[in-house]
Amino acid sequence: MLAVKQKSRTVHFQRAAQLLEFMQLPKDGIHYRRLIQGFERIFAASIFFGTDKDRAGSQCFDVARFHFFDRMELWFNRTEPQGSPAPDQADNVVTLSDSFYEEVNQHPIPVERQVVAGLANAPGLLDFYVWIVWKSWTVKAGPARIPLFGPQGLQGQLGAATYSRNKRFRQTLRHWLQRIKLFWPECPAAPSPDGKFLIVRSSSQSPAIHQASA
Image (tube, rainbow, N blue to C red):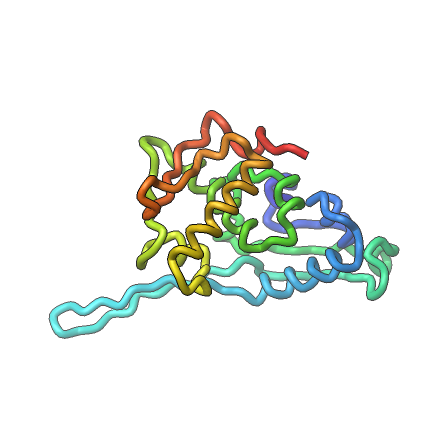
């Protein structure tokens, strides 16, 4: 969000507490520590895409790697989230990778900061909210039918493999949709009558960012 707002893949901010303010999160020790840990995890994270092909007796691996940040220079107060700025008023600097900046700049999605703040303590639900916003924003024609299970299923896309029974995942999905609709009443997603798919319609007429409540 800040990269799009500042129109640069190199993001500057003075204090970590400014990010909590921007995301409308409490400036307390718990959220401050989570912010620090989140930066560390994201910087270390890489996503790999690839296929394994067999052609005429030969094997080919086609693999690509994606990462989020190229560089970070962050100053954190050890004890106080709202403490003084870094030594000598030094900027905090986060440089996004070219590919990540290009993606967020060319394909922004209308995620509501109030909802992110409201779901900050429910990471699975927050992932699902962001997924629905993205999916519904990219649907252009008829509704998309996303299978709940299988190789391309929603369960796998959300990384929810811990649900040992399909019934439990369906129940969790319904509960998540109820929570999301408290913030976004016109959320264009619903389970199919047979419980095998999630039906997602276009949100072009009802984007999430216009429907969030307090």
